[in-house]
Image (cartoon, rainbow, N blue to C red):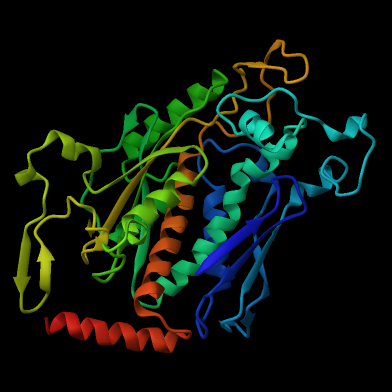
Length: 387
């Protein structure tokens, strides 16, 4: 499978096209839009989320509730477009038109300056409109379609916030279903009420100071069969593909699997997962420090991935920048933004990982229809059982 997205943060709409999705998958439109609504929630979000009520509509590839095998076209309309029709219109305007709201002071931490230099754009709005995290709306939409394919095979996706600023959540032994239920009720997507209160207080303090906060989010995927991905080429390793997907999310700066960077502090005997075998369960691991991967392939254990998100770059007490016209020192321009988007980023991370796992599932078990994929998976599981 592959997908492409298009659209700007203040343009008329966001669009995605999915190619290679199998036929005869029943899509639940409410579940898809639920993922978009989850992305808009979370303590610390800005006013833009009060304007937009993201809902995806299908413009191709689905008939009578089922996929046809043709490319799937998804559209999310930007409600805020009505306030930006002059600024973001496609028709030519006079160079000195004040309605353009030209951006000439790049914001530190954003793509503004690098993009302006790369594409030779003297109005940095042409960069920030596409590099904005608003683009992740369609990545959540495509991931939401992919996770419905995963659900056909009993694969579940969950996420939680581990840290915001200097407040960290103590680990708890919860089932995936419990994790989903508890985090959905938390404004910062945590399982610990004490940490939740501290995180909310930290976000409030940062907002009062005109500052922002980052954090760490964790995604768990359960029910994945052994053998997705491959060791034979570097670009077929599934953990590598997931790492790229996570780091492609705006403001993400790090990723780890299982115990991750903690492995550097331990001896090998306390890092690797011993292999067990029982007649009932087959091959299993005693622990899951590797986070569900060995040699770029799934082990059959839970996939556990963490991503590090830096603080949002737009500050209401802006940092120093340079005017690209005069080359004089100024404070950077301020665009509407969030104080903390870590809870929302966790939702994005869930869905970009779901896409990669679904894609690996299709790579392994092939098929143009859901029925063909089921038959191929059943044959493989029987092969594994008889190994």
